Image (tube, rainbow, N blue to C red; front, side, top):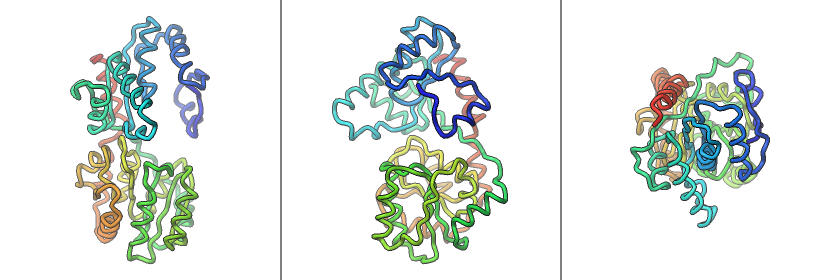
Length: 326
């Protein structure tokens, strides 16, 4: 709809970017119809609702025959607070959009079930393709030094979480679990920005741990922070997938995550490559963090697991689906 975002310049170095230059979803079908009639692509991939509902409809309106693939990356629970009218719109539009599409993809098995329930379709009409997570190059010595300076604490109990600071990530749970940790030398770092930052800072002060919590802000490449951490923790209430878990594994950093719907358990192979704890359980989270910090982990094994989510594997699956057309 609109060419914008922190990584736009990086994308334009490798790919053509077409800016439809529209601001409202209601204008998208007409802009997309014009684009399809003019450019006549062989395939069209739309990610995330409402694009997954609008795009198949626009493709039919255009009269241009191309294979349409829709993919979802987030759970419908994201919209649970938007009211009954919105929930009905989500169900009806998804049901129509998914049926008009040739191919339907979800980034985890749990998400597939969510898509099926939402649209009243059988799960076997959907395909699972895990998110591709690229392996970033080794950070420079300068980048490592800058990360070390932010930690300002010895290794052994450095805990990191990465992602936007918003309600679904349940960062207050992480602060409460960290406050119960019997390791006064431990440090907790948040890499990311968001509207919930001030509330987290206030809670950290109330818990008496503000001097041990670091807000590193948005980082275009968080690799140096993963590399200098001893443990990565994800406390989300739900995740379509969980790219940050794969990023941590790729750096050989051990992981503790809530066993939320639905990606983390699949990435960690249900506990084989990291610890899983119940959603919202601060005591269990504290225990898992303590156990992880006290346990030696084969970092090469974690890196090998991260390689299972290489972009080449995901792109091959997408191309195969386009070739099959269903």
